[in-house]
Image (cartoon, rainbow, N blue to C red; front, side, top):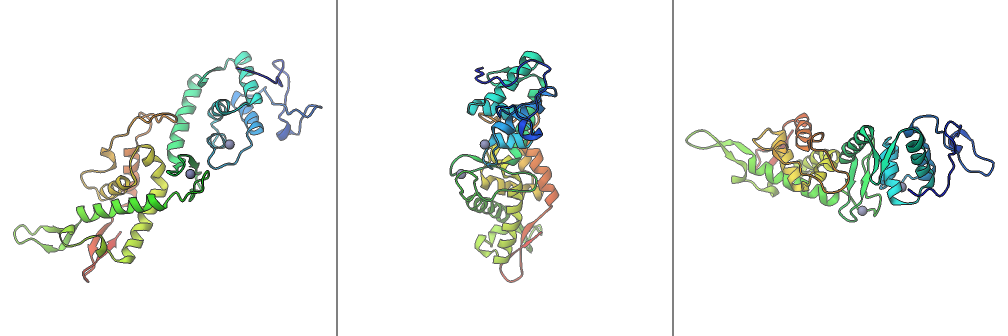
Amino acid sequence: MPVTRAIIPDPGTYYGLGREHGRRRPDGTPEIDVRGSFVDALAAALELEHPCHDPSCDIAAALGEGFYRVAAGLLIGATECETVEDVVTYYCRHRGEEWNAYGAVGPDADRERADWSAWHVRHAYPCDGCGSYTYADDTWTPDRCGNCSADLWADVEREAVAGYVACALWAGLDWTVTTEHGGDPRPLDDAYAADDITPEALDEIREDVGAFLRQWWPLASAAGWSAATFGHNYYLTRNRHGAGYWDRAWPTLPGFPAADPATIDAGDELTAAAHVEGEAELEPDGAGRLAYRQ
Ligand SMILES: [Zn+2]
Ligand SMILES: [Zn+2]
């Protein structure tokens, strides 16, 4: 690994990060504290060399969430970063860390990568327009792509609602009309179509499906499901029909971040979340149209 500027000399020497501790060398070069842990030193070097708040930057996301080895690996792969490379070199030479062309090596590094993958599939909102991700945190979900400003929801929500409504008509039952023989209810789509849903009911469905979609779309899209499939299975799962999220396969995802099927089961996670939302269905409103009952 090329090291073009050595700011970290002998082991055991105190170096404090310039910005954080107000310490700089006389020539102005910031200094990193290498007495503590590898990740603390990496974090300091990363904050110095990549002070980025771009909501579409995976390095900023990994750094912000405390995945310092991952962030360092991404930064080293993306651009020149002498200080981060110096820190890696120092800890590999003197403190027993290992690093190869793919990044940090060892059980701590493997765990961090798996945790990063798990975080990524829950917080990375994909943009169909430009292919980049915009990263949410626990208090904020993006409306627009941080890279190209495209509306992240217009198409996705329309498709999810369409899938949900089609499934609700297909799987729903009209208990107000029963057959002569067994007293069974009539399938809803025998007599009703999507344009029989009242505008109020459609607004409620949009709000209901839209909220669930905003929370879970990163995971569902990482699993390769379309928005229509997502909406269709939301209906089936929450109403406990004989199919749903749990019986859909979790594929092996190409490229990074590679989600570990042993630790991430999108079907189980979405099933549990849909069950929390509870049942909801279309029903005749008594005036020839369909209402939404939650
Ligand atoms: Zn960045
Ligand atoms: Zn975009």
